[in-house]
Amino acid sequence: MSHGIDASAKATSIGSLELHALSLRRHILRMAERVGQGYVGQGLGIADLLAVLYSREMKYDPKNLAWLDRDRFLLSIGHYSIGLYAALAEAGVIPVDELDTYGADQSRLEMSGSEITPGFEMTGGSLGHGLGQAVGMALGVRLDKKASRIFNLLSDGELQEGSTWEAAMAAAHHRLDHLFAFIDCNNQQADGPPGQVLNVEPVQEKWKAFGWDTQRINGNDIHAIVDAIDAAKENSGKPHAIILDTLMGKGVRTFEERDKNHFIRVEPDEWRLAREQLEEYAQPRHRGSA
Ligand SMILES: Cc1ncc(C[n+]2csc(CCOP(=O)(O)OP(=O)(O)O)c2C)c(N)n1
Ligand SMILES: [Mg+2]
Image (cartoon, rainbow, N blue to C red; front, side):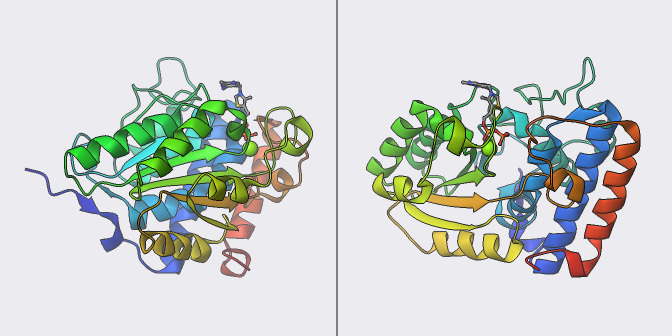
């Protein structure tokens, strides 16, 4: 019988979490370079959250993915899968070597992950379905008297889906305080900044009005992410929304500075530059909240 892994026993210091996030960024860059393109900006932007969740916060067993007491991570936004693949590889759920198949024919690691990918709790390519499923799972584990938590990662563009708000209303009504929604506000969507496409702000006030416990933080600051999750856990009776202001392409300067980062295609020599810039970022003075 499995006892699972309590991720909190593994990486606790901010320094080790930063190194974990750096490993994720290296994997992400390598995956994207192999195919010459991809949702690399999203992966680099959300690596800090994924490092905290998978190496500090979540309870799971890489050898028994159906363990009933596990915490669930639901990726609403399937196009962010490159980041989750890296996190699952570091977590021992998929072999690190398999990352080299990202986006290839017959791979389990398609550009948008699905039910064939180990460790994926849902298929999320069609936006707006994650929070509804998260609410259902949160009700289910409560009925089963399990201590599992449900974590859902949404994006700012996804807030334009009405189904998200139905689910938000239901979560507050049912006082699902074991449900955590992370909203990646990278100020981008496929057609430009949400403020120009269809404004989603003020994001925090909206979640608050829907009855959620809310915080808004720098989503590329590991310290802030850890503190926000710890504070949310202390606050009972409401579901938790942690809004993350992130920078797409974080860690690779030329990606960070691009106007449009939704789907990155770059020439072979630019990948070399990207790798060099990530290694520059890897120097301790450039990492973290500094
Ligand atoms: C229901 C649905 N509508 C449209 C799309 C097409 N689509 C894929 S990603 C995306 C942008 C969503 O915004 P966001 O996740 O904030 O984009 P990013 O930050 O990754 O650029 C859109 C419209 C989709 N996948 N599902
Ligand atoms: Mg976005």
